[in-house]
Image (tube, rainbow, N blue to C red; front, top):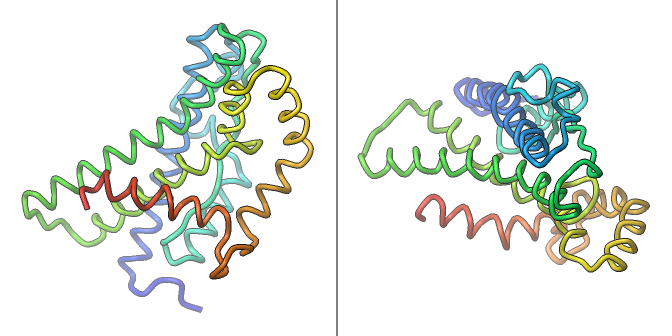
Length: 224
């Protein structure tokens, strides 16, 4: 079974995998840790997570799934995760608002990485520069995956970062009820949203989110 059309695509996929594990994931988790530390919680620092060292943030299962998804999709899709950053919300200044800021820091880091990649792509197009095809493949894949990670993590379902933002936006009684419900059923809801094609055209709920939000945002960042 052949997953890549050319050897160059395989090399580009492996480079993208390495960049995600060595750059994108560590920066995402470091952003959580740094935001928590600045807001008064040193838990991540005590566990050695206030660092950009990829080894400190590597999750074997998440890394394996990321590698398999990139390889099996021929380099067009990647799904995985790093080791969750430990945070004690009770130590954070600002209460629920502080917790939301810590949660937002991770997706924001992915957005910044996507913007950097988009700026490089736009510069290459504007100047007519023609780098090796493998470099272009890595740039586009890195851009796409970081944008997808940002959007996906902001979905307001536990254990994703967006759930913390949701709780901060709700009034306390509603937030308490939402937390109780989503803590019990959030993972199931997320699995349904990701894997079950329950919408017309065999589309998943997550696919709809990426189409409605991801495509326009990607077009905006790339200047398309």
